[in-house]
Image (cartoon, rainbow over all chains, first blue to last red; front, side, top):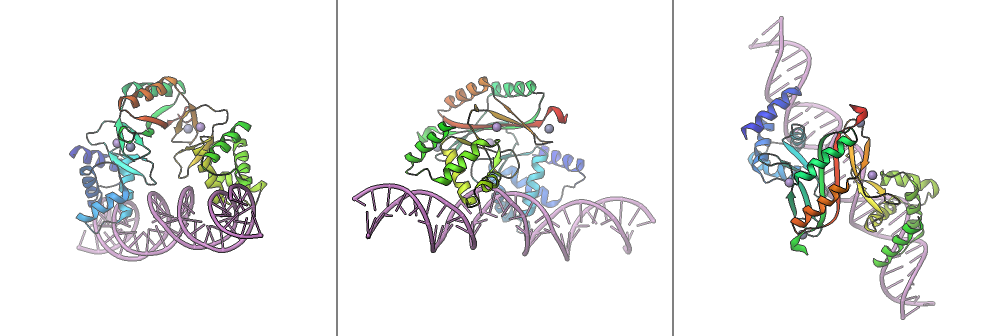
Length: 141
Length: 141
DNA sequence: CTTGATTTTGAAATTCAATATCAATTATAT
DNA sequence: ATATAATTGATATTGAATTTCAAAATCAAG
Ligand SMILES: [Mn+2]
Ligand SMILES: [Mn+2]
Ligand SMILES: [Zn+2]
Ligand SMILES: [Zn+2]
């Protein structure tokens, strides 16, 4: 929690930017929420505490948080970009149900290892990846 | 080539739809192109041969081709959805360079196997997946 | 403190891919 | 032929995301 704020401050400094009230408040609210929310979702929550914050700032701050590696974009198939924070959450991928939209968070160390190996084969330096498996969940069968 | 058209006809029949002139012509042009083009890219090419085709039809046909499993949506990180056809191309994933935008097509049977295994663990029936690794390519190092 | 340069912000306008609308055309069935 | 359904393209609309811009806040000297 405090750790994320410090990471954010360091990142901003590196980019010659400052931790403003608005940025701090957006980050705080974001870290407290359930993950996988859209910029608009977050904006609506932030607005309850502080009606003066504009959505442009929420969009901008979410981009910064991704740059700082505190947040991650997630594409769950609906039209809008969603974000999840990494506060206390290991890297994982998603199994997304095409019927009900629910999703499972999963991670396989063996796959992660082979992904790195695959990159090495092409002299490619991996930074991050998205793996999304679409299909039908247990409940929808 | 003829095979894809037959697949398309069968798919359309299943959906109570017909293979029209426009749909046929769009598919033909699409199969002849390099892959990974946007709906607009394809529209511009189609238009050269037949100025009367509307872009709505190109959008609609690309959706149908995805449904028929002849085309596949690809997200290469720019704002727009791109499409690649599967004519003579095995399934593969993408290593995308965040510097220059170039990408490598790659596939690892071992990863594919483990993906299926991962799904089984969650009683999840996979239909398709996206795996995109972002990083820095050989040339950009 | 001033002063001036820089950054940040929020409201509003804009962008742009994608979708919906709709009247006209075409195909199909009886 | 007649009714029904599907298809089309021009156009309008949507909606997430970005850009613009003037005002406000922050900072850096002097
Ligand atoms: Mn997640
Ligand atoms: Mn490809
Ligand atoms: Zn489901
Ligand atoms: Zn590159």
